[in-house]
Length: 387
Image (cartoon, rainbow, N blue to C red):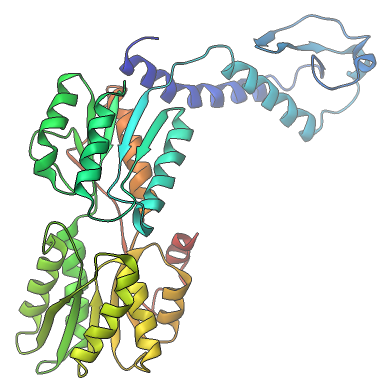
């Protein structure tokens, strides 16, 4: 089977090898036309072929490309060339079975953001030919479940681990045990204690929160009021929230920012908490919702209470849902910090494959985000993240 590094290098090279195979076919396409044996083509059509030329063998038999004197005067069609190219590349890739590297992926939960991240991880693994084991608690903030899943991955013969820890310090022991076995570690979204991860893949939470804090401050004049619906997080007040609050207050020292309402522990609680915030602070000029579920719930609450467009919203969330795009179009959502969870998942697995292949990566790989407003909503770049 070879080492994890050998297998990862071979997986990364196979796509390039396939491209080279197609190139070689193209460069030799001015030779005499070909007949295909072993294909679905009627055998009688190839009876007069002279069997001379290269052959590629796969598990199902031989695909042979030979000059055909009967077809010599016929022009080659693009479709024949394409079919031949695909057959030869498939046979080339089937010449050798490469034992896939095995990557464990441990996410924070299976809510909106992390479900999308899982899809990205699976996409990247499929593209690289790697095997992945994806685990995640069913509900947010389930530290005991996440640690149990990490301990289960300790028993698996994995070559790399992509992990989004709920509380990084609690992961120290199991991660050190994995590193001692030579497992490569990719920290996703939340950094691990120094020295435990080979690379961090995620958003620069400080920069992202500063952008949102300044944008929120522009909506609220001095002397006016805004409110933040805080996340119900196992880590207490997150770096995102702390930075956003500090940025807003630095920009609007004479404005008030309420931070006394915390979202529920369950997703279905977010609507009730959004209504509570609006009723507790009826005179706010703007509200900020720093995560996906609360953002979508606040859109509904503002609509139901007749406040859409009167109370402006700045939200964070996954990609660009239709409900958010509509809220931006009608003016009730002033700004949307669009994260790309599918991209963070794919980049995490890609980093793991690259590490296993012996590639050197920077200590941190930032994932891009967008601050979407009515001004840039319909640009091609922003519309691309709706897919």
